[in-house]
Image (cartoon, rainbow over all chains, first blue to last red; front, side, top):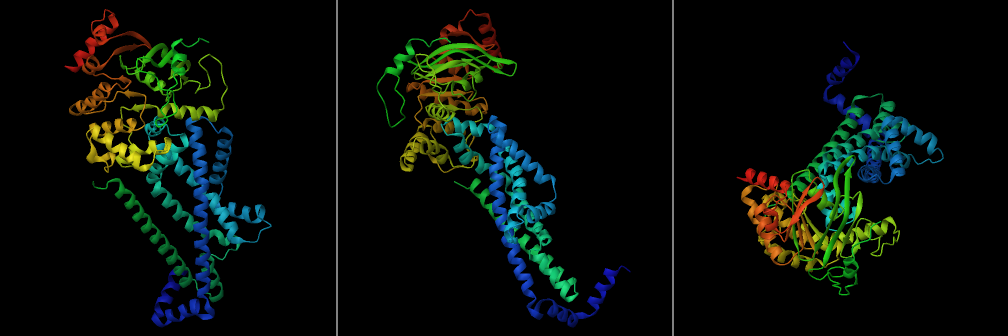
Length: 246
Length: 292
């Protein structure tokens, strides 16, 4: 019988008393629950700040890229954007994080800040391509109508194209945030005390793997489910305005 | 470089201004509003326009007919620079469009910056209403927002004034009850009437129609044409690309027959429908056959 199955059966065979005891050891004793709550705090902080940074970078890159595609302008910026997107998407996130921590920001000791920058820059490259696809999906007639009324390119972009593009790409953007939220678990590579590392520390102190890691997994799952729910509400709201009865 | 016709500077020198609408000099009725000189447009190797020269007068209704691929839509789209002409000059109210105001009536080039040219171009376009075959209403905005957006953003009209104007226009096109509707709740004919109202909200000096009824179900063509007839009766300068020959016969002051990228035939409806140009006759016969 595989080792993990037999140990799982042992844990179950112990019954409620054994579970309660193990739970006490993992979370209550020596205030070990704080590893989880501190980790959760760091994880949320990194994920939320990185998603905002990623959105900003993504918008900027997407507008440079699609302006270049349509008008042939901004050639130099477009070249930089293309290199950036290629490099970020072509290398593993873990390696990018290690490079950020040990090379680029070697002098800085704020792990949370470094993680935000690394995850934000990474997310930006993916968001850029999502937004660019969204902009491309809006038919040319929309910009033509805007320009024919005397709006500038920037006004047409901001008032006409982007609102429609964002509504179309909202599911893809939400998915990107979910991926980012889970990806932050690799921040333990640079020793950031995030949620996953909280579970890891408890395991190393208590020699108990099941309870801390299953608890950590459950927390990630709940976070993702809450976010999916919020996203669903937002999408429905946008569709409601679209089909609002007169 | 060819010099613009002598009538253009005369239009520039007209001193009257209407500051509420825009800062353009007002062209009196019957004077040249749009002057086109030797207009060429190529897409890659494909030559679509091969030298069009004409003058469109203030208050005139010009209908452009011709076989598909003849350059009708491209000609219209060059007039407000949605397509950049390959060569040639277009004068609108005495200002030169292709160079975005850089070329002066006397032929000197001011070498304006890119930013300045873009600003000029936006100003010209705000004075030229355009109605598209596929309506191109903004689907994420109500009808009212569709109409008031450009006056508020471009003309800086107050929201209240813009709304009042929009309601007036909606009444004029017969759809005042649709103000809070979204475009996808409307029929094609209604959408096109809203699109006309949206263009009119900028108080344009000319209205360009690019096959405005071609995407409509047959029973909705009439409602759009009647709005256009009403505009013509109120002396709006109009350039209309259409296959509606009855409309052309009834409303046009002049008809251009565009074929092979040039104006192959031109004249009043009576002249065109009785034209002895063999090309015109063949085309008219084909249109007649397809519509019966």
